[in-house]
Length: 497
Image 1 (cartoon, rainbow, N blue to C red):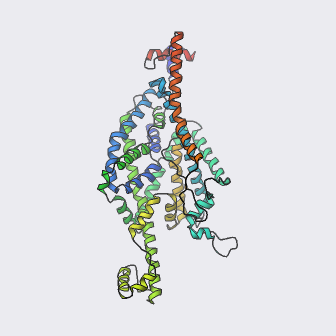
Image 2 (image 1 turned 45 degrees about the horizontal axis):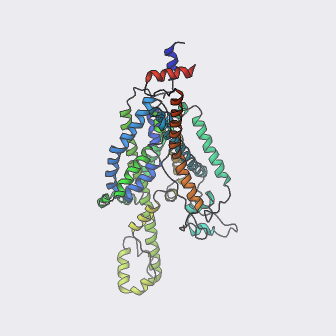
Image 3 (image 1 turned 180 degrees about the horizontal axis):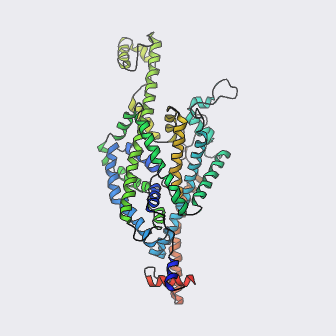
């Protein structure tokens, strides 16, 4: 075997079957819950369409340059995150180790979400959906009171899915069906990983494209719902004064990191399987622009659904007041309607204000219901509640759960993510209301431990490399220069023999 063939085999690395696989993998890795969950929430609370200004500025001056840097460096050195940082400087090898540990930790979290998605997916093959109605009590004389006091959606999530304890100090028992779902999630991940990028490249044809199909179906359906225009108006009405708040710009910059999944090492690994002459500048523009366009595209059906939910609550509030007024003043059932409710209320307040005041009518204002929807933002509870009102709701929810499945498993492919999980301490007596309680010291200890352990690898590796360098200098030997092509090839040849 000649020297050239040995050097070639030492540098051999798997490649993507085609450019489409690579782009779909990068887009699928970048597009996730940050696009369909966090971006619409930030866009609403920070002035609607006005938030797009700092977001686009952060995309141009922060997101695209860093995205290009990761794609270029992985493609040029053709190594993963650990190998890339070690090639730049052996002292920086700990940066790659830190990104690997963080990716592992958040990958564990995302697989938990994947288990929840599978749980809901398996329960979606029922009509009606189990979270659309309260279950019958043991005596079969009515519904479970805990469910009646809250909502069927909340009851199914907090009691039948999580079986949440009254306090974080109580661990409770294992939910064995969730354990089975978690094991199934890891089995699916293993199957997708079994042959490396060969199987991942095939899987992304479904996991990267199916979410766009579901978003389009939801967009068409959501725009036909009553109140959809109110939700879109609530989303895109700009509040220019909020642009003076530095927190808006900080969250816009943070959202770019979350959305593009920068600094986790996944993009470096994906680009390392490209040929060195690949046009990574064009790839950067394609991935970055599609990612940002997806954020805006996903916001439209989501806020249309939230507008529908707020409008339904507003109509229920008005109808409740109409019923109270009809009974109290002995008015015909069809005399007071949604259209003339305000005029009737003004008239009755003028003729008999004391009697109207004694009814304790609810204050019904659409803006208040939109605000109530917003404070929980885009969590699954409001989405589930809206899905119940869809015709053939189980079909919609089957698509929705598979949509979430695709979003999550793409992140598991590289064990990278961008969200943090907030634990709500629930009170059993006031279920599903929450009570603010201080966290125990062990909770803070775990948070500090998870935050510091990955970072510790950076100084540890640097100190280790410095000690080895000093030891080698004393013995008269030294490490090869990673930027010296000749020495690098010679070093690889020595290792091969």
